[in-house]
Length: 341
Image (tube, rainbow, N blue to C red; front, top):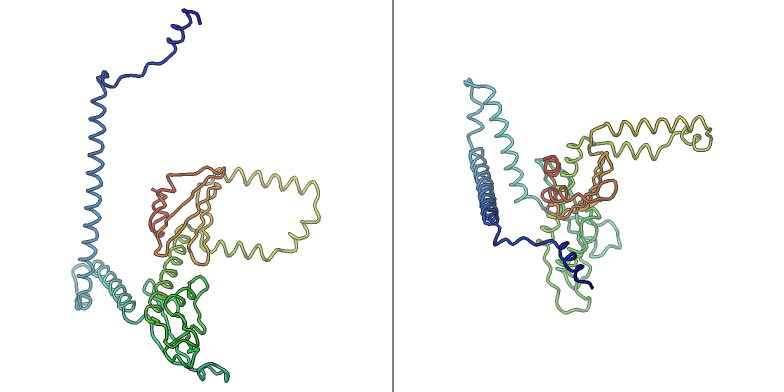
């Protein structure tokens, strides 16, 4: 290599700036440190605000649960009647909330006896029934029954699930295998069973399922699509005779008209605002899919307690949207609010 080529090559190499000699570098470090301090202060303030909100809600529930408060609010005349009516509504709502808590704690599961009419039934048809009542949003939503039988005459205290009315998405069999294990017929001792724990965990699964279902239902209502899925499925299942005939009989004029209608629909779709057009979930409400009018889709994984553990949001061309995925994490109830902010 000639001597005049080396300086030319070296001249093309960019020099890396030395931060030690750059007079603006300490100033930038100071700015970054101050930004970190501000972020930490904002986080602490937000945590303090959340704590104060929780304390306020606790004190409000204690005040609204005072026994004679509703009676005092019914007394007339009052100086401000609208304020009294508003306070009465709040007290009534708190009373319903207290009733729900008491019922969940005390009377969610009851037992009863029933007899199997089958003459060949085991244990002479003696059946133990467990009634599980689910109470969600101040209403009794459903009652489920689990019937138990004694499969072995040798082990009188051993129970087995005979029949039940619990939905298929609830793991009844898994809970029974864990808390109601079966003993061998020739075993000298009975395997320990915990019927109370089985009932509690089964009711917990049912309540969580109903809460998830109610949350998704509320999300459909907030998105303004309640009932559209049913109408769309009904239309797809019941085609008219005209549509069937048009599938076999067509001409060029009809095709041109269809093309013009599709172009009009496409032009109008670009002008319409972007909104959610569909919210679907599986039977167990553990996987929820959301579709927008612009082709964007979202797939959500929901835990048993109603928290969104994973979210995948994609555009019409398949690109991921990390911002929406990050904001989706949290409770199902506030998903649309988090996406709209």
